Image 1 (cartoon, rainbow, N blue to C red):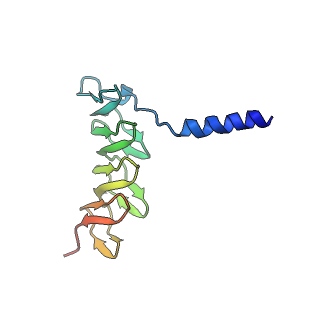
Image 2: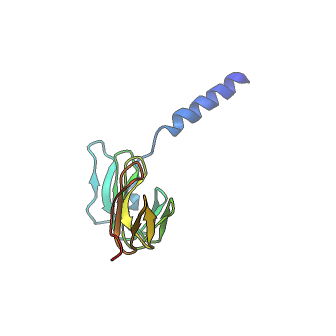
Image 3: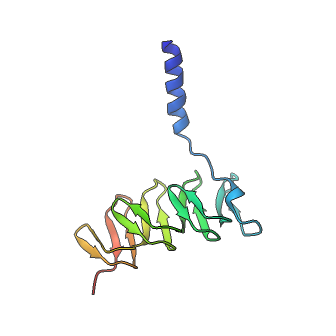
Length: 138
């Protein structure tokens, strides 16, 4: 019994280490589809609004992926909440390979690292989550 539990535990740990590549079936037929040299999907226009890495990306917009399948960037369909920041709908959003937010267009005014960032303007973050840039109120 202990051996079975140990084997199941090892399979769970090893299985969660791998990320599955994104399937090209999400791409709009006839649009440009780019692949990495290993055959994994790099970018394409989406045929439908599609949930990718927790973000609903808008139909017919371009989506880019890292080689391991994590979302790199797309145009959002809905508002996206990330650790208190609300990214606007129908705007560009990007992520680091780690899955942390790199940048988006703010839907609401937000204070980040003691600086007020205005709504409807881009914000970019370092991978650590610290503010890289944003537009201040006038």
